[in-house]
Length: 84
Image (cartoon, rainbow, N blue to C red; front, side):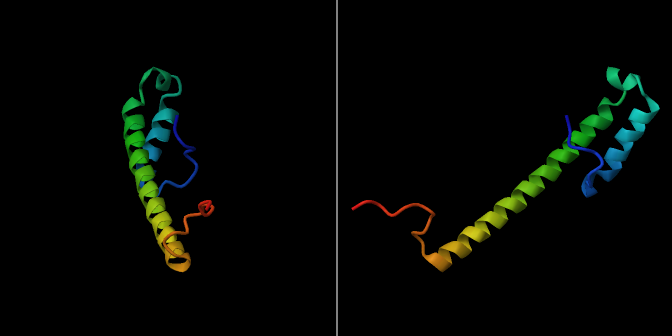
């Protein structure tokens, strides 16, 4: 399975177009592997795209945590204070 192809995939748009074209040109042969090369290329591209998004989200979360620590102090991690 892959994500919906109608959503924008700027890095992979040429590969997605090639897969869609292959599916259109091979309506029944696509079920027996006629488009496997295009699908493998698309999967690899989507994997890179997802990795880029994951890295960007991690950087954003770390920046948010750092701002929170500076504002509330190093010990503010969202937990209740220890019982005395």
